[in-house]
Image (cartoon, rainbow, N blue to C red; front, side):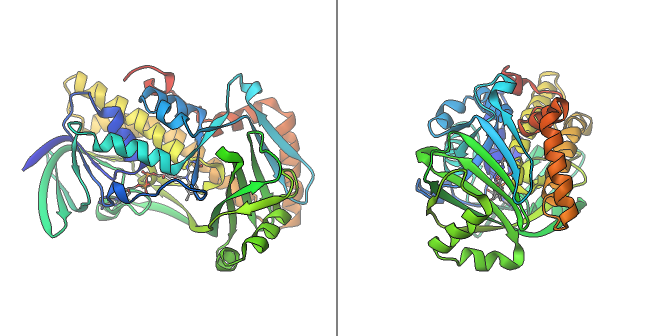
Length: 405
Ligand SMILES: Cc1cc2nc3c(=O)[nH]c(=O)nc-3n(C[C@H](O)[C@H](O)[C@H](O)COP(=O)(O)OP(=O)(O)OC[C@H]3O[C@@H](n4cnc5c(N)ncnc54)[C@H](O)[C@@H]3O)c2cc1C
């Protein structure tokens, strides 16, 4: 049976970032990934956009990935938050933070490609792909994973298993790790548009009576749209013709970017909050969407997952340097407790935003307007919001401080 120090299940954006963090640290690494990398999408108008916080950019820079990602990164200079039909809006600006950008919008396709190259780099790790983890068992000495590679079953051993297997984590289910789930009863309709006026690197968050709407600046003067609609309306919205869709979106967003002129393919994502109640067990750590799946309104999911990676990598490397077993619960508890505050704050912030801004009662509209005006006038409250959205909400791991592991 082959044996590893760290077995990462899931080679998505979070699992692959962890590979990059741990590569070259003298660890025997393996990844199990169900979907072959070469089938992932090609560049095009319909690229899905991911907003990366300033802190995430620093971590990616520390991991040596930023140069490749920066080629298609669009900086966010300002975030403009407003409420349709109500007075009051707030702005966050890079100059207030003394930074070149509040964050960056990068095509998910590029992040996946750059990270896919990392995972497929010969000599870094053993890659089981396409392969599915079918069973995981533990004893005092380590974990044993049963892997299905086509019709072949294989067993591999590891001192530590990292569950990076996404929102529907089979590891979480198989081990009976309790989860809190809230179904928002909403769907995110995701697409790209080209407005008449240049976006000037401004990201817009607009709250409408049918749900929040985010418009992010992208390359080629495109903007990425994440439009939350009631689940019951999603088929009707995605079936609209381009002209009808643009007219409906224009009505919700207004004319800050002039006429909305072109729209790409629409994709619908059901929205749920999933929060694992445990993030570590002996020989197991959960990262990324397996630990927390958020409403995408504030663009925080991957950012939170990359911060999991920065902390877990630091904890593992420190343990190995001190000649300790990286799968030991005492080692992993350091990761669990370090991440608790950030998980709690960002989940509460995102969930609060998603729920408060979809309440239909007119009275809440007034509260929201007052809230936004207050936020704009009260520097400490606004600063806290900026810090959270930029990923600077707690103790900072070495990678996020620009230091090597
Ligand atoms: C509409 C939308 C917009 C978003 N926008 C943003 C944004 O702007 N900014 C941001 O930070 N976040 C954003 N997010 C969130 C972000 O996309 C996710 O947080 C992130 O992709 C999670 O990555 P992950 O690697 O944890 O999970 P996943 O990407 O789900 O990866 C899990 C991997 O595990 C593999 N896998 C699963 N089970 C098994 C198994 N049993 N065996 C082997 N392999 C397995 C899967 O094939 C997959 O590759 C958005 C999400 C949505 C839905």
